[in-house]
Image 1 (spheres, rainbow, N blue to C red):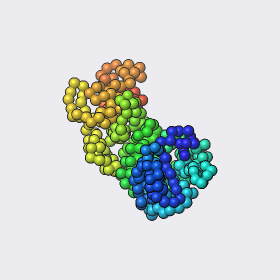
Image 2 (tube, rainbow, N blue to C red):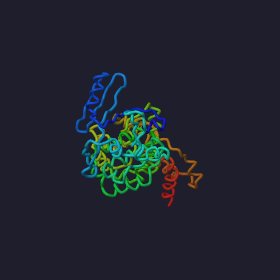
Image 3 (tube, rainbow, N blue to C red):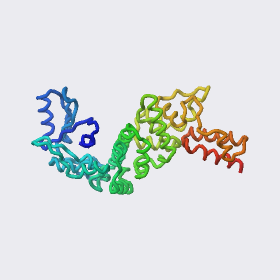
Image 4 (cartoon, helix red, strand yellow):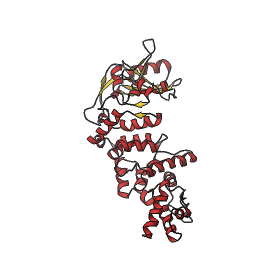
Amino acid sequence: MRDLVLGRPVVDLDLVTEGDAIALARAIARERGGATREHPRFGTATLETPAAGRFDVATSRAEVYDSPAALPRVSPAGIVEDLSRRDFGVNALALRIAPAPLRILDPHGGLEDLALRRIRMLHPRSPFDDPTRAFRAVRYANRLGFRIDPETRRAIRAAVASGAFSRVSGDRIRRELVLLFSEPGRARAIAELGRLGVVGAAIHPSLSTDASARERLRRLERVAAARGGAGWLPYLLAWAAGLDRGEEEAVASRLNLPRRESRMLRSWPETFRRAPKPGGEGRRLEPEERLALEAVRGSAPGEPTRLAIRGRDLVEAGVPPGPAVGRALAAARTARESGAISEEEELAFALGIARERDA
């Protein structure tokens, strides 16, 4: 309903019934053709049909969380109660198709939220019940160009302060990152997560959301677009550039990464040093590593990093011509390759190195 009201493409369809959803799905499959995949614990079924594709059928229900970040206990309830368990007002909308006439159900002001372009949780306990809703708030705001409601921001920060995020499994946090890094605007997304305090609480405090980290993600988006796209892992690698091995290992452990992804992240600090140099040989890099290195360095592995500044920029800024200029440029290149600085920070960094040597 959110996307329908906004005029955006509707990519998935959910049906909710106040009766038995599994029985309804079976009846539709018998009458219209298709197959069901049933989930009795939650009273839901996924229906595959030749004419209408795949959609989910759910029994309207209420949820009770026994403790923060725990999976909920569910019980049958009416449609209004069902909408009350949703994460945000913009998602607590339904179109009543039976009995006629068609009518939009909006018990929590979702239409107003859409008009005001805001993402608002339905109650202040929401991020305590399910802290991953903070990731979804950022993802929806980023995707739709909305702002996160001030009360929702306060509720997320309160959940952060309570330690609720530490009780969420690494698998669930990883799934949210995969979704976040699967949509454009990754730099904006991590910046918002950082402002809310979620990055340190949910993943690891060593992950920065500063200008350098954001620039690496923006650069990777450009590189990936030129290469025909990328999965989520290169974005994690580019984000984590500059961490030491112990920090990379902590992030890999926290996210419970599968073996291959874990190996790449844990060895990421050494990858910068082992990557092929111009005219040299080195370990064969995985595609994700090559993409991330190209974004971090500003050049493909095997090519020298291209700085935005030149020696004349340092001279014009007051550095006397001589060896100090070359040393400062070399230091800036190394810092760029490690992800320690962004392109915009090159000049200030190089000037600091040159003047430090002069002193």
